[in-house]
Length: 340
Image (cartoon, rainbow, N blue to C red):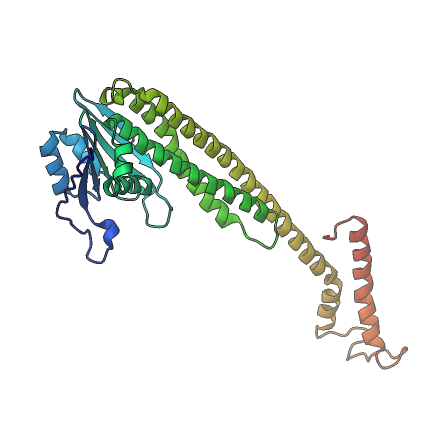
């Protein structure tokens, strides 16, 4: 028998008249097998207060569900649990939050998820349950505890996609570091920031998911062992955490390598300019001396030399300037000071 679908929508409130529908606040509910799933996106204070009246939730938990600065945690009560989980947004951009928060109220016959609509896997899962009877019967056929597992599993799988993108970026940066024609400091800094944000999210996530697996068993069917399902999720989190730790170490190596290569390139440039300046010193000194208003051999006051013709003085001055420069060049070459 096909299960009836119940969908309720509360009046929405836009945060700003010019913002798009992504920021629209709304509440929807789908009915599962003996329990309901209520999803609240971009919650308003009025919606949270109405939720508290409907379920008699703790006021502090309700405040935490709309707060942007909460730490990941789990609060257990006799008839329900309150969980806060953090996940990264799909794309980290300037002005976007560094953490997407998911607040969950779970009881025997309900599951309430509260978020800002940035968690695409969760939004897609809810829409599929709302619009597709077969998918809804599969996801909502067991218990609130199993549904919570499916939600966390989908969000952690999305972390694996993010991880693959970071690994691909690491490979690209590795190639760029050894390419003298490409600048990598900005790329390295941006990726280091993203890795740092993900590590701050993933490491606490493992602990909360482990506690959740133990706590939500009471909200599942007796024949469903959620620990087995959550163990698979924890293994994925461990893999993400381990890869992020390795990526952090790799980024430090790339940063040091880029610094050393940049320093070496700068040293070569400075060495070349220094040698050019040094070779020009004899000519500069002689030119400066003969530019002074004093009597010097071959000067205007004493008369130019003409043993080699009218340009004897010029030839003599060029020779006097060139010979020291040539000798210095040969000395630098012998000492291997010339830049390659």
